[in-house]
Image 1: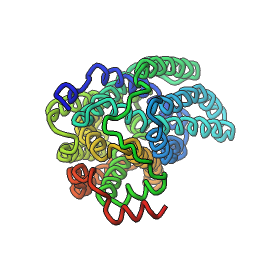
Image 2 (image 1 turned 135 degrees about the horizontal axis):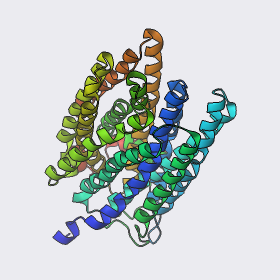
Image 3 (image 1 turned 90 degrees about the horizontal axis):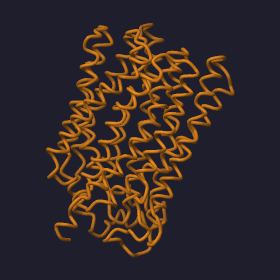
Image 4 (image 1 turned 90 degrees about the vertical axis):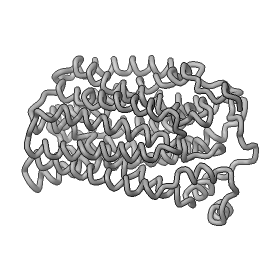
Length: 448
């Protein structure tokens, strides 16, 4: 492969990255705005709301199946786009259900119809997320030469973290105070913006004849034996544990961060929605800086970057716990910014390792496994955050202790991730990709 073929097609990667702008306008409606409305404005318990947010992640095994099926698509056909569109359209169509949910639960917090519609919306949303997420990552990976795949995934991730704070500011201005009419307008605007960016990103993003240069022509393994083969590698198991604990620890505050601002400091909806902007700016700065300074590193050389990011994400979470206890509001925005700085570094390192911990023949299946891990345990983390908040509030009667408990446990989990990541031999996994399967993997594959 000559130097030109090794070069990343930056304009194409940037166009693919705009997909994440649309995704952020969808995700923020469900993970930020709706949680705040239900928990703070409608005074519902955090646990069932967090469980709704987490529900879509509990279906995460679908991402492995979708990735596996897209890997099997024959040459001369579209491999990734049918799955991406097949997931994103249901996500968009689930959004108009949300205002009906808030209207019903505002009138009757125990409304079975309201909770039933919420469950239905989040199931549709979750299935769509899982079918399209791993296949989108595979499309980005396919678009880049092997040495630049980590860089390509990091670049599209920049769009995600930039657009979250932008969407947060826009939503905060459109609905500074909750009312049903404003929420309807917010949902319709969010749907329109999301569809426009997703359609632009995916327009001619894949050509039917486009297949990996080094694709393996041998028949594919059946699905379950392939999973056993992947799981038989100890490095993959340690990486799974790292991703799982990292997702739980980094996202436990997802459903309670904005209610934290309302319950502890009395901030209104518009002010707490801007929390996403404060830490998102930090993410953008550190993510862009980290991509620049590590641009000459291969994806499998980013373990130390991920460890530094974990440490600098854990510290502000510990400080958030202290802020909750002391109610020292002056430090809130700076610490949220610090959280974003650490999270940006961690994101670059972790995304690069995702690109490295794959094989050419089963790229989407591996990315499906890692996406499933992150989504499933992100969902468990979101639920755990709401549950810890409610249990601590019940035990202490104090909002400060309730929210501090969530933040402190997150910090401890991220520190533990550093120790786990030390056990993952990513360079060894990459070097061993082209070698014959070991005895354990061979038996696992033959067992099916």
